[in-house]
Image (tube, one colour):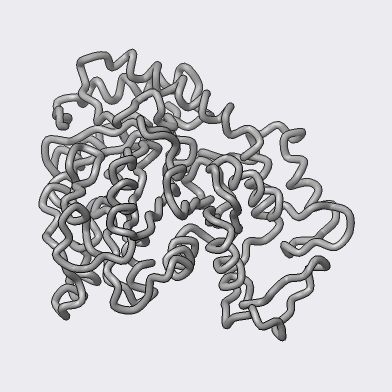
Length: 388
């Protein structure tokens, strides 16, 4: 019996050594700092150019991780103490935490459909809004066309958390493409993994602000030397990505389309075997999902626990994606009690969160492993319910 590990979206032991040329180049010359001396171009510079182009942005900058990227993006678009930022309630706690970390107030956007957000707080805000943060879930892209229009009408920036959605598409286009700022993560369980690491992509001025905030506020000249006497220098922090991380990212970025194709193939086969017997939580454009996960809704929290345990007994790992919306955690309940958090309680998201299940389909799955996953789900389909 094979255990299907949800974290194995990158496994060095399974990669063709010839595909790791950037990683080997960094190891060979021993320059692990992002400002490389000599002829080799910085792997950081390579991924910045690559993802700016892929996301349709003017520029990008690599940073220490996705949470740092969100925090820097917020600061770069002018969000600060006391500002209200609308954020998907159904999201990892790091999203709201990044908002709180810059002194702003995270305000939950409830679910509308199974994986979409309720835009009413943006259509008729009861308080001024300074930014909107939309979070894509487990390789499923949320349509943001209408949200983009509303942000333009209100005059606030749109930040897209693409940490789990790199390569995903909705009917409105690719995840991150309509955002003023898109943020990626390269943490272990993402489409591209270097253990940690992140990237911020957007307009040239915003990205330059992020770059300086992440690089001790320095202005870097052509020779890479930091200049703190330049009048453009600011007080910053050290939130850079290493060359070794960036090299791993670049090697995987080079084959991302192949990775997505393999994952989509596995997920398509899984859904073919499941047929109509097991209802799946659909995105607005299923063929545009990255294929990294298939999502289901359990009948109850108890059913969710039993489903995960039953699949584990068959060597298949399933998990509740996020057991709570961020306002339900003690940290944010205390925040709410102090009067710092505003906005309606995300009733639908809070009800659904502990019941939404994710089953991974990484590129490393074999055909027999896909069948094993399907058999385990079919045997436990009584725990799953149709939900839209």
